[in-house]
Length: 324
Image (cartoon, rainbow, N blue to C red; front, side, top):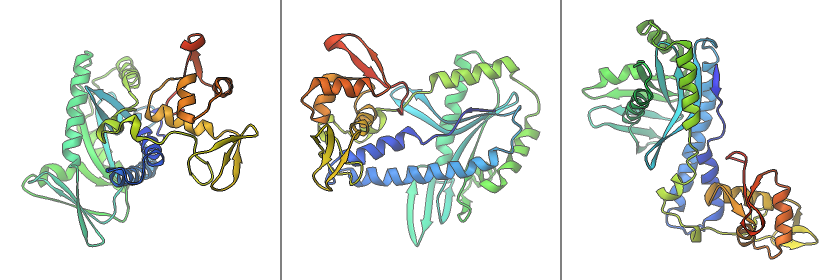
């Protein structure tokens, strides 16, 4: 049963907004752009991998995609978690080309592609941290100690992988290509055949994970040490992506490509919610979009299908969900 569907991860939307609103000469701009490219590729790989998940018994497996679980000031992001009455399985999906090397001796993950070698975070250590996090979470909420396993799935059908080092025998069973994933599932089903969670506990656990799932809105800005003052403000053109649009004849006008837009301010409002705060006042929207009239902004906000609270100058507006 699909409990949490897969959508474009919020972190991708945040990185896209940053690439729009940071100057090209910002010190970490290229690194941010590269992370955006990696995460887009990763998301595409996760979507491709979902093809194989549809073969799982619907009444047996609870499927939760893109869970962001709070871990102090950090974020424990899981591509996919499967939960049954017998066991839970953490799935890390890698959509990478070329030759992928799992170096167990030095705990390194290396990609060799087009004769270029590059190192990445070791996915086995990452999965083990997520495994321990989930164990502690279940214990803290008094759930029975269900077995928690993990696996790294290579979703790029043209990639090859090799596991080296003295601990290769331990890691090899935890790495597979997407097309043999269902064979791994059969292995886990044979290994864990005794129910540990009853139906009530299974549903309760899924509700808990959904409840504590936390949108990591501030994580990226902290990671790259980005301040509000680093960001471009104003309304950008939906056609040429240039700043700053002007108000002309009750529309937004782009002096760069000479086009008009009725609702370009909506994209600016989305960027504000992604990058700055989950709520906004009339004055803050005026400052951000370079609008002088509070009545114009009031009309924009009231027609934006968002939630308002407070009164007069204390009134603020919040999106019903993030992303909005």
